[in-house]
Image 1 (cartoon, chains in turn orange, red):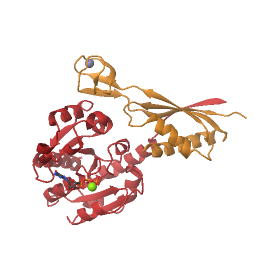
Image 2 (tube, rainbow over the protein chains, first blue to last red; image 1 turned 135 degrees about the vertical axis):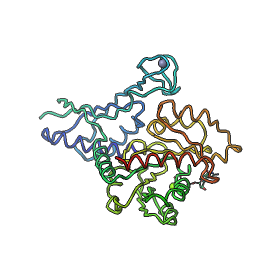
Image 3 (cartoon, rainbow over the protein chains, first blue to last red; image 1 turned 90 degrees about the vertical axis):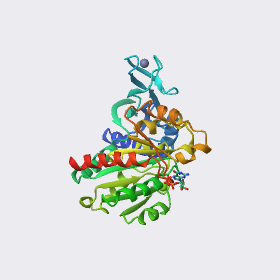
Image 4 (spheres, helix red, strand yellow; image 1 turned 180 degrees about the vertical axis):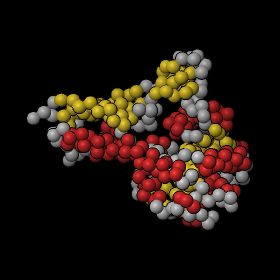
Length: 115
Length: 220
Ligand SMILES: Nc1nc2c(ncn2[C@@H]2O[C@H](COP(=O)(O)OP(=O)(O)OP(=O)(O)O)[C@@H](O)[C@H]2O)c(=O)[nH]1
Ligand SMILES: [Mg+2]
Ligand SMILES: [Zn+2]
Protein backbone atom coordinates (compact mmCIF):
# COMPACT_ATOMS: atom_id res chain seq x y z
CA UNK A 1 0.00 0.00 0.00
CA UNK A 2 2.55 2.60 -1.10
CA UNK A 3 -0.45 4.64 -2.26
CA UNK A 4 -0.64 6.03 1.29
CA UNK A 5 2.95 7.34 1.07
CA UNK A 6 2.24 8.82 -2.34
CA UNK A 7 -1.00 10.43 -1.11
CA UNK A 8 0.91 12.02 1.78
CA UNK A 9 3.52 13.47 -0.59
CA UNK A 10 0.69 14.73 -2.77
CA UNK A 11 -1.05 16.38 0.17
CA UNK A 12 2.15 18.17 1.22
CA UNK A 13 2.48 19.72 -2.23
CA UNK A 14 -1.20 20.64 -2.44
CA UNK A 15 -1.16 22.29 0.98
CA UNK A 16 1.88 24.33 -0.01
CA UNK A 17 0.34 25.50 -3.29
CA UNK A 18 -2.98 26.29 -1.61
CA UNK A 19 -1.24 28.28 1.14
CA UNK A 20 0.74 30.25 -1.41
CA UNK A 21 -2.48 31.21 -3.15
CA UNK A 22 -4.26 32.49 -0.07
CA UNK A 23 -5.13 29.41 1.93
CA UNK A 24 -8.57 28.76 0.56
CA UNK A 25 -10.16 25.34 0.30
CA UNK A 26 -9.09 22.89 -2.37
CA UNK A 27 -12.11 21.53 -4.23
CA UNK A 28 -10.53 19.35 -6.89
CA UNK A 29 -7.22 17.63 -7.59
CA UNK A 30 -6.18 16.43 -11.04
CA UNK A 31 -3.51 13.79 -11.47
CA UNK A 32 -1.89 11.92 -14.31
CA UNK A 33 -0.98 8.33 -13.46
CA UNK A 34 0.67 6.16 -16.10
CA UNK A 35 -0.44 2.60 -16.77
CA UNK A 36 3.05 1.43 -15.81
CA UNK A 37 3.41 3.70 -12.78
CA UNK A 38 2.63 0.85 -10.43
CA UNK A 39 0.01 2.93 -8.67
CA UNK A 40 -3.60 1.91 -8.30
CA UNK A 41 -5.75 4.95 -9.11
CA UNK A 42 -8.64 3.94 -6.84
CA UNK A 43 -6.34 3.13 -3.94
CA UNK A 44 -4.59 6.48 -4.41
CA UNK A 45 -7.90 8.41 -4.43
CA UNK A 46 -9.05 6.54 -1.35
CA UNK A 47 -5.74 7.10 0.45
CA UNK A 48 -5.92 10.80 -0.39
CA UNK A 49 -9.44 11.00 1.02
CA UNK A 50 -8.13 9.57 4.30
CA UNK A 51 -4.91 11.58 4.64
CA UNK A 52 -6.60 14.87 3.67
CA UNK A 53 -9.20 14.69 6.46
CA UNK A 54 -9.03 17.78 8.63
CA UNK A 55 -6.89 19.62 6.08
CA UNK A 56 -7.51 22.34 3.52
CA UNK A 57 -8.05 19.59 0.92
CA UNK A 58 -10.66 17.58 2.81
CA UNK A 59 -13.41 16.44 0.48
CA UNK A 60 -11.56 17.47 -2.69
CA UNK A 61 -12.61 15.51 -5.76
CA UNK A 62 -9.64 13.55 -7.11
CA UNK A 63 -9.64 12.91 -10.85
CA UNK A 64 -7.05 10.54 -12.26
CA UNK A 65 -6.15 10.68 -15.94
CA UNK A 66 -4.51 7.38 -16.95
CA UNK A 67 -1.57 7.92 -19.28
CA UNK A 68 -1.24 4.98 -21.66
CA UNK A 69 1.74 2.69 -21.96
CA UNK A 70 3.79 3.86 -24.96
CA UNK A 71 6.53 1.80 -26.54
CA UNK A 72 9.15 1.95 -29.28
CA UNK A 73 8.97 -1.35 -31.13
CA UNK A 74 12.02 -2.87 -32.80
CA UNK A 75 9.89 -5.27 -34.82
CA UNK A 76 7.70 -2.74 -36.70
CA UNK A 77 9.94 0.26 -36.06
CA UNK A 78 7.06 2.37 -34.75
CA UNK A 79 6.47 4.24 -31.55
CA UNK A 80 2.93 3.85 -30.27
CA UNK A 81 0.67 2.22 -27.71
CA UNK A 82 1.84 -0.84 -25.83
CA UNK A 83 -0.23 -3.78 -24.69
CA UNK A 84 0.30 -4.17 -20.96
CA UNK A 85 -1.37 -7.57 -20.83
CA UNK A 86 0.70 -9.03 -23.63
CA UNK A 87 3.82 -7.04 -22.63
CA UNK A 88 4.18 -6.18 -26.32
CA UNK A 89 3.68 -3.59 -29.05
CA UNK A 90 -0.07 -3.07 -29.49
CA UNK A 91 0.42 -2.51 -33.22
CA UNK A 92 2.29 -5.63 -34.30
CA UNK A 93 2.56 -7.75 -31.16
CA UNK A 94 6.34 -7.36 -31.20
CA UNK A 95 8.34 -7.89 -28.02
CA UNK A 96 10.61 -6.90 -26.34
CA UNK A 97 9.93 -3.18 -26.64
CA UNK A 98 11.42 -0.02 -25.21
CA UNK A 99 9.04 1.86 -22.89
CA UNK A 100 8.67 5.54 -23.85
CA UNK A 101 5.61 6.48 -21.78
CA UNK A 102 3.31 5.25 -19.06
CA UNK A 103 5.44 5.84 -15.96
CA UNK A 104 3.87 9.25 -15.15
CA UNK A 105 2.94 10.11 -11.59
CA UNK A 106 2.14 13.79 -11.68
CA UNK A 107 -0.07 16.42 -10.09
CA UNK A 108 -1.34 18.60 -12.93
CA UNK A 109 -3.75 21.07 -11.31
CA UNK A 110 -5.92 21.92 -8.34
CA UNK A 111 -9.16 23.86 -8.11
CA UNK A 112 -9.28 26.42 -5.33
CA UNK A 113 -12.33 28.11 -3.89
CA UNK A 114 -12.64 31.86 -4.48
CA UNK A 115 -13.69 34.21 -1.68
CA UNK B 1 -13.46 28.61 -8.04
CA UNK B 2 -10.29 28.82 -10.07
CA UNK B 3 -7.80 26.30 -11.35
CA UNK B 4 -4.08 26.40 -10.65
CA UNK B 5 -1.97 24.49 -13.16
CA UNK B 6 0.94 22.77 -11.43
CA UNK B 7 2.77 20.00 -13.34
CA UNK B 8 4.54 18.57 -10.31
CA UNK B 9 6.09 15.09 -10.03
CA UNK B 10 4.36 13.66 -6.99
CA UNK B 11 7.50 11.88 -5.76
CA UNK B 12 9.79 14.85 -6.48
CA UNK B 13 10.89 15.12 -2.84
CA UNK B 14 11.95 11.47 -2.73
CA UNK B 15 13.66 11.88 -6.09
CA UNK B 16 15.59 14.91 -4.88
CA UNK B 17 16.78 13.12 -1.77
CA UNK B 18 17.67 10.01 -3.79
CA UNK B 19 19.84 12.18 -6.03
CA UNK B 20 21.42 13.66 -2.94
CA UNK B 21 22.22 10.13 -1.67
CA UNK B 22 23.54 9.22 -5.11
CA UNK B 23 25.88 12.22 -5.09
CA UNK B 24 27.27 11.04 -1.73
CA UNK B 25 27.88 7.55 -3.10
CA UNK B 26 29.50 8.88 -6.26
CA UNK B 27 31.78 11.21 -4.30
CA UNK B 28 33.03 8.23 -2.27
CA UNK B 29 33.16 5.79 -5.17
CA UNK B 30 30.69 3.44 -3.47
CA UNK B 31 28.70 1.02 -5.60
CA UNK B 32 25.15 0.73 -4.23
CA UNK B 33 22.73 -2.06 -4.86
CA UNK B 34 19.00 -1.98 -4.06
CA UNK B 35 17.91 -5.60 -3.60
CA UNK B 36 14.19 -6.17 -4.09
CA UNK B 37 11.80 -9.13 -4.22
CA UNK B 38 8.62 -10.59 -2.80
CA UNK B 39 8.97 -11.86 0.79
CA UNK B 40 11.09 -14.98 0.97
CA UNK B 41 12.43 -15.05 -2.61
CA UNK B 42 15.95 -15.34 -1.18
CA UNK B 43 17.40 -11.83 -0.93
CA UNK B 44 19.22 -12.42 2.34
CA UNK B 45 20.39 -15.91 1.31
CA UNK B 46 21.84 -14.56 -1.93
CA UNK B 47 23.40 -11.67 -0.07
CA UNK B 48 25.05 -14.08 2.38
CA UNK B 49 26.51 -16.08 -0.52
CA UNK B 50 27.67 -12.89 -2.21
CA UNK B 51 29.30 -11.62 1.00
CA UNK B 52 31.16 -14.90 1.46
CA UNK B 53 32.51 -14.57 -2.09
CA UNK B 54 33.26 -10.85 -2.23
CA UNK B 55 33.90 -9.61 1.32
CA UNK B 56 37.50 -10.91 1.34
CA UNK B 57 38.23 -8.55 -1.57
CA UNK B 58 35.81 -5.67 -1.09
CA UNK B 59 34.68 -3.60 1.87
CA UNK B 60 30.92 -4.12 1.98
CA UNK B 61 28.25 -2.52 4.14
CA UNK B 62 24.63 -3.60 4.40
CA UNK B 63 21.36 -1.86 5.19
CA UNK B 64 18.53 -4.26 6.01
CA UNK B 65 14.98 -3.04 5.50
CA UNK B 66 12.13 -4.89 7.15
CA UNK B 67 8.74 -3.95 8.50
CA UNK B 68 9.66 -5.40 11.90
CA UNK B 69 12.50 -7.31 13.52
CA UNK B 70 16.22 -7.67 13.02
CA UNK B 71 16.38 -11.28 11.85
CA UNK B 72 18.13 -10.38 8.61
CA UNK B 73 20.62 -7.98 10.24
CA UNK B 74 21.58 -10.75 12.69
CA UNK B 75 22.23 -13.11 9.77
CA UNK B 76 24.41 -10.53 8.01
CA UNK B 77 26.30 -9.59 11.17
CA UNK B 78 27.73 -13.12 11.32
CA UNK B 79 29.65 -12.33 8.14
CA UNK B 80 31.58 -9.61 9.94
CA UNK B 81 30.39 -6.71 7.81
CA UNK B 82 28.86 -3.47 9.12
CA UNK B 83 25.08 -3.74 9.03
CA UNK B 84 22.24 -1.44 10.00
CA UNK B 85 18.64 -2.55 10.39
CA UNK B 86 15.84 -0.21 9.35
CA UNK B 87 12.34 -1.05 10.57
CA UNK B 88 9.63 0.74 8.64
CA UNK B 89 7.03 -0.11 11.30
CA UNK B 90 4.39 -0.79 8.68
CA UNK B 91 5.51 0.79 5.43
CA UNK B 92 5.94 -1.71 2.61
CA UNK B 93 9.08 -0.12 1.13
CA UNK B 94 12.19 1.88 1.93
CA UNK B 95 12.48 5.44 0.68
CA UNK B 96 15.37 7.82 0.09
CA UNK B 97 14.73 9.50 3.43
CA UNK B 98 15.02 6.30 5.48
CA UNK B 99 18.28 5.46 3.74
CA UNK B 100 19.66 8.97 4.13
CA UNK B 101 19.03 8.85 7.88
CA UNK B 102 21.35 5.82 8.15
CA UNK B 103 24.21 7.08 6.00
CA UNK B 104 26.05 8.75 8.86
CA UNK B 105 26.36 5.33 10.48
CA UNK B 106 28.69 4.26 7.68
CA UNK B 107 32.11 5.63 6.86
CA UNK B 108 31.61 5.81 3.11
CA UNK B 109 35.33 6.37 2.59
CA UNK B 110 35.85 2.90 4.04
CA UNK B 111 33.32 1.19 1.74
CA UNK B 112 33.45 -0.18 -1.80
CA UNK B 113 29.92 -1.54 -1.82
CA UNK B 114 26.68 -0.81 0.02
CA UNK B 115 23.89 -3.34 -0.31
CA UNK B 116 20.39 -2.21 0.65
CA UNK B 117 17.98 -5.10 1.13
CA UNK B 118 14.53 -3.62 0.61
CA UNK B 119 11.34 -4.72 2.35
CA UNK B 120 9.95 -7.93 0.85
CA UNK B 121 7.31 -6.71 -1.60
CA UNK B 122 6.90 -7.06 -5.36
CA UNK B 123 5.10 -3.76 -5.92
CA UNK B 124 5.90 -0.82 -3.67
CA UNK B 125 9.73 -0.66 -3.62
CA UNK B 126 9.75 -0.18 -7.40
CA UNK B 127 8.43 3.37 -7.06
CA UNK B 128 11.00 4.68 -4.61
CA UNK B 129 14.48 5.55 -5.80
CA UNK B 130 16.96 5.26 -2.94
CA UNK B 131 19.95 6.68 -4.79
CA UNK B 132 21.30 3.23 -5.67
CA UNK B 133 23.54 2.47 -8.63
CA UNK B 134 21.54 -0.62 -9.64
CA UNK B 135 18.22 -2.16 -8.78
CA UNK B 136 18.54 -5.92 -8.50
CA UNK B 137 15.43 -8.03 -8.16
CA UNK B 138 15.07 -11.61 -7.09
CA UNK B 139 12.31 -13.89 -8.33
CA UNK B 140 12.27 -17.43 -6.99
CA UNK B 141 10.98 -20.21 -9.19
CA UNK B 142 8.63 -21.19 -6.36
CA UNK B 143 6.65 -18.00 -7.01
CA UNK B 144 5.61 -18.97 -10.54
CA UNK B 145 6.65 -17.93 -14.05
CA UNK B 146 3.59 -15.66 -14.42
CA UNK B 147 5.03 -12.96 -12.16
CA UNK B 148 6.45 -10.70 -14.93
CA UNK B 149 2.94 -10.51 -16.42
CA UNK B 150 1.36 -9.76 -13.05
CA UNK B 151 3.99 -7.36 -11.69
CA UNK B 152 5.45 -5.71 -14.81
CA UNK B 153 6.63 -2.55 -13.06
CA UNK B 154 9.22 -4.27 -10.86
CA UNK B 155 10.65 -6.13 -13.85
CA UNK B 156 10.69 -2.90 -15.84
CA UNK B 157 12.75 -0.94 -13.31
CA UNK B 158 15.27 -3.68 -12.46
CA UNK B 159 18.79 -3.77 -13.92
CA UNK B 160 19.33 -7.43 -13.02
CA UNK B 161 17.00 -10.34 -12.36
CA UNK B 162 18.31 -13.14 -10.18
CA UNK B 163 16.09 -16.13 -10.89
CA UNK B 164 16.61 -17.92 -7.59
CA UNK B 165 15.95 -21.40 -6.21
CA UNK B 166 16.64 -23.18 -9.50
CA UNK B 167 17.47 -26.25 -7.40
CA UNK B 168 13.68 -26.51 -7.01
CA UNK B 169 12.97 -26.61 -10.75
CA UNK B 170 12.39 -30.40 -10.76
CA UNK B 171 9.62 -29.89 -8.19
CA UNK B 172 7.73 -26.87 -9.54
CA UNK B 173 6.29 -26.03 -12.92
CA UNK B 174 8.31 -22.98 -13.87
CA UNK B 175 9.27 -22.20 -17.46
CA UNK B 176 12.61 -20.37 -17.24
CA UNK B 177 12.49 -19.33 -20.91
CA UNK B 178 9.01 -17.87 -20.54
CA UNK B 179 9.84 -15.98 -17.34
CA UNK B 180 13.03 -14.61 -18.90
CA UNK B 181 11.24 -13.53 -22.08
CA UNK B 182 8.42 -11.82 -20.17
CA UNK B 183 10.79 -10.18 -17.70
CA UNK B 184 12.70 -8.62 -20.59
CA UNK B 185 9.59 -7.69 -22.62
CA UNK B 186 9.46 -4.15 -21.20
CA UNK B 187 13.15 -4.01 -20.26
CA UNK B 188 15.64 -4.66 -23.03
CA UNK B 189 18.60 -3.97 -20.74
CA UNK B 190 17.69 -6.56 -18.11
CA UNK B 191 20.40 -9.12 -17.35
CA UNK B 192 19.02 -12.43 -16.09
CA UNK B 193 21.00 -14.92 -13.99
CA UNK B 194 19.38 -18.24 -13.01
CA UNK B 195 20.89 -19.12 -9.62
CA UNK B 196 20.50 -21.11 -6.43
CA UNK B 197 21.51 -19.62 -3.12
CA UNK B 198 21.25 -23.10 -1.61
CA UNK B 199 23.55 -25.03 -3.96
CA UNK B 200 25.56 -22.08 -5.31
CA UNK B 201 24.73 -23.04 -8.88
CA UNK B 202 24.85 -20.20 -11.42
CA UNK B 203 26.35 -17.66 -9.03
CA UNK B 204 29.72 -17.23 -10.78
CA UNK B 205 28.36 -15.07 -13.63
CA UNK B 206 26.54 -12.92 -11.06
CA UNK B 207 29.73 -12.36 -9.04
CA UNK B 208 31.65 -11.44 -12.20
CA UNK B 209 28.90 -9.03 -13.28
CA UNK B 210 28.95 -7.43 -9.84
CA UNK B 211 32.74 -7.07 -9.88
CA UNK B 212 32.51 -5.27 -13.20
CA UNK B 213 29.98 -2.84 -11.78
CA UNK B 214 31.99 -2.24 -8.61
CA UNK B 215 35.11 -1.51 -10.67
CA UNK B 216 33.14 0.97 -12.75
CA UNK B 217 31.86 2.82 -9.69
CA UNK B 218 35.43 3.05 -8.35
CA UNK B 219 36.84 4.34 -11.62
CA UNK B 220 34.47 7.31 -11.77
N1 LIG C 1 15.56 -24.44 -2.10
C1 LIG C 1 16.03 -23.20 -1.97
N2 LIG C 1 15.65 -22.44 -0.92
C2 LIG C 1 16.14 -21.19 -0.83
C3 LIG C 1 17.02 -20.64 -1.80
N3 LIG C 1 17.32 -19.38 -1.45
C4 LIG C 1 16.67 -19.14 -0.30
N4 LIG C 1 15.96 -20.22 0.09
C5 LIG C 1 15.12 -20.36 1.28
O1 LIG C 1 14.03 -19.47 1.16
C6 LIG C 1 13.68 -18.93 2.44
C7 LIG C 1 13.68 -17.43 2.39
O2 LIG C 1 15.00 -16.97 2.13
P1 LIG C 1 15.50 -15.53 2.54
O3 LIG C 1 16.89 -15.40 2.03
O4 LIG C 1 15.26 -15.28 3.98
O5 LIG C 1 14.51 -14.63 1.68
P2 LIG C 1 14.32 -13.04 1.70
O6 LIG C 1 13.95 -12.63 0.33
O7 LIG C 1 15.50 -12.40 2.30
O8 LIG C 1 13.06 -12.88 2.67
P3 LIG C 1 12.48 -11.53 3.34
O9 LIG C 1 13.65 -10.68 3.75
O10 LIG C 1 11.67 -12.02 4.49
O11 LIG C 1 11.64 -10.88 2.27
C8 LIG C 1 14.67 -19.50 3.41
O12 LIG C 1 14.08 -20.62 4.05
C9 LIG C 1 15.82 -19.92 2.54
O13 LIG C 1 16.56 -20.99 3.08
C10 LIG C 1 17.39 -21.48 -2.91
O14 LIG C 1 18.15 -21.10 -3.82
N5 LIG C 1 16.86 -22.74 -2.95
MG1 LIG D 1 15.63 -11.00 3.87
ZN1 LIG E 1 5.48 -3.20 -33.28
